[in-house]
Amino acid sequence: MTHYDFIIIGTGAGGGTLLHKLAPTGKKILVLERGTFLPREKQNWDAVEVFQKDRYHTDEVWHDHEGKEIHPGTGYWVGGNTKVYGAALLRLRAEDFNGVQHKDGMSPAWCVGYNDFEPYYVEAEKLYHVHGRRGDDPTEPNMSADYPFPPVSHEPRIQGLNDDLKAHGYHPFYLPLGVKLNEKDMFHSACIRCDTCDGFPCLVDAKSDSDINCTRPALQHSNVELLTEAKVTRLVTSESGREVTSVEVERKGEKLSFKGSIVVVACGAINSAALLLLSANDKHPKGLANRSDQVGRNFMKHHNGAILGVSTKPNPTQFQKTLALNDFYWGDDEFKFPMGHIQLLGKLNKDMLAADAPKFAPDFALEKMATHSVAWWLTGEDLPLPENRVVIDKQGNIELHYRDHNIDGFNRLMKKWTEILRDVDDEHVIPHSLYFRKHIPIAAVGHQCGTTRFGTDPSTSVLDEHCKAHDLDNLYVVDGGFFPSSAAVNPSLTIMANALRVGDHLIARV
Ligand SMILES: Cc1cc2nc3c(=O)[nH]c(=O)nc-3n(C[C@H](O)[C@H](O)[C@H](O)COP(=O)(O)OP(=O)(O)OC[C@H]3O[C@@H](n4cnc5c(N)ncnc54)[C@H](O)[C@@H]3O)c2cc1C
Ligand code: SF4
Image (cartoon, rainbow, N blue to C red; front, side, top):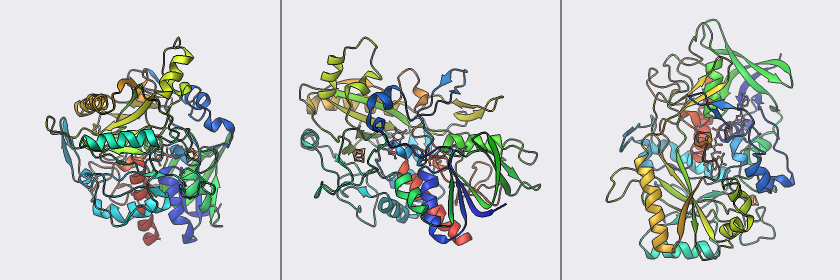
């Protein structure tokens, strides 16, 4: 049996980025990915297929703490959820690393600081072709290098909004985006600046995802082997319990087993926790790496809200997701606690609206709404609670226990932004839950994190500062699970930067 230096499980923001970092070392690397390459097909850009029929979501059914079904808004592909993400690639704020007082409790400090992450943010921004402009966002942390590419420009309707917001004293900024766009030479630009980006796969491979930017280039190295449709079902340890000795896989009805010196789990926060829990044995009776009983706990997913600003002004914008605002990230005069982050959503069309509208809503009304609206995406920080957790039921399936908390700041942000839009843009704002249907809000797991948090104390954390399991010598977790707090900006750039950081540690180790 081949013995690998590294086995990486999962190719999303964490696993794919780590693979890219390790591939040039020449070490023997096996990548196990449960999905296939996402097919390039016309349906990639078809809103009915993507939003109404959930074409790229798993058909797995999970359950909540009351046994109600959850149809998770997640997919299994080479590239993981970055295949469909909006590619908004933001750094956390420097203060997010230090511990922040919220209305309902403390957001815990990270065991490494912003300055430890900073060089890896620079590296990740380069690797993922991030477009942006420094200096417009007052909450921006210090940055040692400029963005590698200029900001993605606003189309006229959004530029108007930007100017109006500025005239009212707000600080909108260009949303940092990972797309391969060359606005100076559109003829040669890979990205065509279309209206089916946020939530869709990119048919022309111009979105910076961890498949296109990391996994495929890594496969050019002869020391890298990728096995798709390879679902890891269990990690087996030595008798002492200190090392993972083999990785068990189900592939097309067959059971396979692989051996590696270092095993990296990067299945996404929920599936990584599930895999560790499912790998319980005599030495690890509560699950692998779970002496602290923290595996699966402290699950976070952000408070997310989508709102639609409908106005009399037509909105012919194609690529809409270009503007963001952090003016209330830390609160305002009336509310001295963090509230959250605001960014534009991709352009909506009638078929996307229909996914969330009552069945009787007529097409022409949805069409009118779509062509006269601007859609926003708001995120607020949820705090880590031990009872919000991933649990494995008796059949070995995933249960997700989650209750809303620390939500006042976010609710205020939704209300405040609605009022501001009315004031600044004469918009009539209505709530909308585009991605994740209203009746199953817990299915909104796009921003999942926290289930295997890192820290220096093995009694309160699962991973050490290098994301190695405290309880094992050769097991690492490199996905969104390591977050001790969720902050309030999109998580991917931090997952990518962390994978590069852990990559340096692993290179030094071997
Ligand atoms: C619609 C949508 C829009 C989003 N937009 C943004 C955005 O604009 N900006 C942003 O920062 N974030 C965004 N996100 C979130 C972002 O996609 C995730 O934060 C990120 O992909 C998480 O990275 P990860 O490595 O933790 O997990 P994933 O990217 O989910 O990767 C996990 C990988 O593990 C594989 N896997 C799972 N279980 C197993 C197993 N048992 N065996 C083998 N392989 C396994 C999966 O197939 C997958 O490849 C969005 C998410 C969604 C759904
Ligand atoms: S906007 Fe660009 S990156 Fe996004 S889907 Fe369209 S072509 Fe691809």
